[in-house]
Image 1 (cartoon, helix red, strand yellow):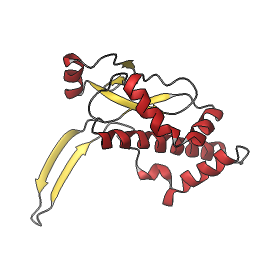
Image 2 (cartoon, rainbow, N blue to C red):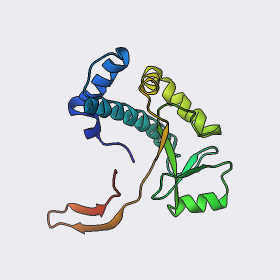
Image 3 (tube, helix red, strand yellow):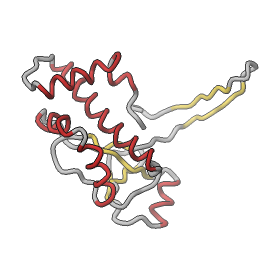
Length: 170
């Protein structure tokens, strides 16, 4: 459930502006531009955490302390243990592990999940501080999403064409 490159602007221009903003909080931007820039910064941090989990091979499996999001909802609960029932619910896509949308407030993740997120975000401490100073509140986003209406077809040229639907915001 990575944020797409369009979020980051042409040639990463939104991220470059975010870096300037965090170095100079008095940088004047319109309200809409500021919101877009802060969203881009949060999105990059989320993608960094998701990449770390993909590299570790646990993006699709719960960790102890994961904030598990109910499918189609923003509600979550903390996985205090990983047992057969939790694993079954993840496999059926009833619940999903989440990553941070950084901002003010305490990260709800605990244990191994929190340690992983803290290690990734430590490399971006100035951006985390900038998002907090901007007043954004801590949030969570599912690390994966399900597709619906999946269909495939081989074209005469030998290309495989996939069609599918994604939920809003994906």
